[in-house]
Image (cartoon, rainbow, N blue to C red):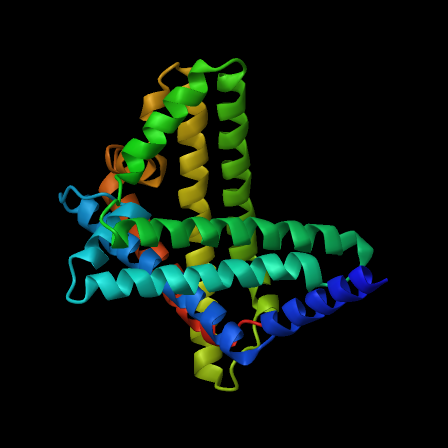
Length: 274
């Protein structure tokens, strides 16, 4: 009985901590940090379209942050904010959505778990760059896919990974086109700010979805053609777009869209329901 009461008390304390104002503020900051990364990736993508040769993914964005004045502090701040948001998302898996319908509760918890893992990975990446161990994301993805390809059923697994990423991309596009993301927000009272939020959300979600779909497509094509090392993640997908007819124009649109998604995430940090 004492053990049960102790476990219940610990769970209650954990839930209370996850709903505390300082923790919520720190978690909200994680969205803003992710927004900054997307803006930087968007700027790098536009630079690629105009002939620059940079790494257009989160690794490239973090590398740029590292070169800024007080870059060390910025990186650790990003790590802390993303870790807080990851913990909040994972706490929602345990404590959240109690009053949600049974049909949607499982999906909401699964989505929260997925986002928690994504932001935890971001936190670890920030910390890695902060201690000077930042890696080229494209090369890391390429090496990982090549190793997976060698194991039994590896090619099939890579195809599945590519399809999952592509489907997530389609979900983003649909969410943007239907503006269903607004359900997550307590929209501001200002009509102008509401309109800005909606425009940035629609454009940003569609661009993010297109980028994810291209990443998934690159996984599938490179695997089916037995060239797994060409799966270099977002950087490889964007550079593949650049090399197509009218590619620089398409890449510019995607880059601007990703920057819009970053701005939307910064607004989401303030207006998201938590």
